Image 1 (cartoon, rainbow, N blue to C red):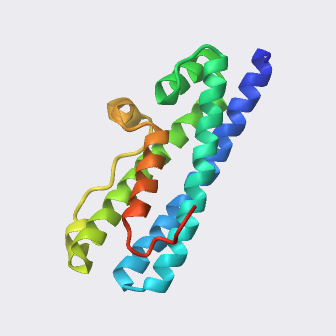
Image 2: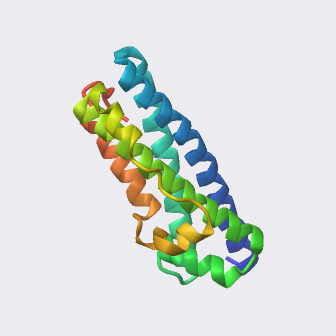
Length: 171
């Protein structure tokens, strides 16, 4: 595969992940609302949507990892960072940073969901006082590199779907 094709395909996986994470954010918000509203029917519907989104995200991450390997980079966020730096295109750099920042928000939403799911509605007060993670380039420099790779976020969220009692059978 030629360099231009690799870059184009990588960009496509980043865009697919951005779209998937954007959709997942709203789905996680709906899940939180279903948990706080104690609506098992709504929760079951949201969990099914979440499973489908996680599967789509996983395909995107796997495709990106294959491209990184083909281009001679390591997989995951470190390989993505190196690839983006090597390509040195401002739009791709911005999109990659946005992708990682969205992954931070997803991880935070997952923590909120876990607190609510484990401790019930009474935990709302506690969750409301947790600070949301910082965003922007400075936050990325200050610690995004230590975050879980997107693949692990997807896997963790997927496993927690399996922990939920209203999980539908099968993928």
